[in-house]
Image 1 (cartoon, rainbow, N blue to C red):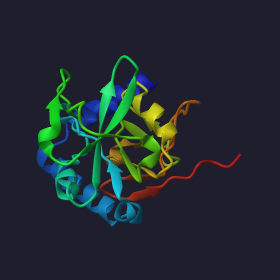
Image 2 (image 1 turned 60 degrees about the vertical axis):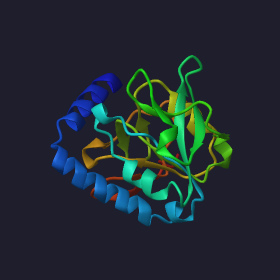
Image 3 (image 1 turned 135 degrees about the horizontal axis):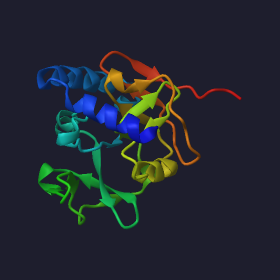
Length: 190
């Protein structure tokens, strides 16, 4: 089920018209900037969007806030299936990985997950309860278990599903921002 959902939504994201995607990205990023959690955050862990995946583009925000906030970006440690967090003060610190993803140079200063004020999370699919389907590697799930700050996902409205099957290791989002709305996630009460 998750694999089929990933495949379908990745395809839908890739098939968006670039001009429409750009408009949606601007709306999503504008909504993020207006969030009190973003305004109050001194340190923000962004993600570097994967161009061929047509993820919500965070580059304008990264460039805008690189000198105004502590901008953090992840690098992946594939053997450990984990993420390391790096401070960046310049885009010159980024290097393209063999997967074509821009990541901070491993020599860039690192930060502990528990010291971050806000995490911006990518994903393939979400539901209104905050459940998330990522790329399937579990990298972000491991990281999100360690953070104590709000977790805000950026997505296109078509990525919001009625319900996503959650697993024990999944960490729910606090908010999801799409071009149409800001979803304040609520976990079902038992």
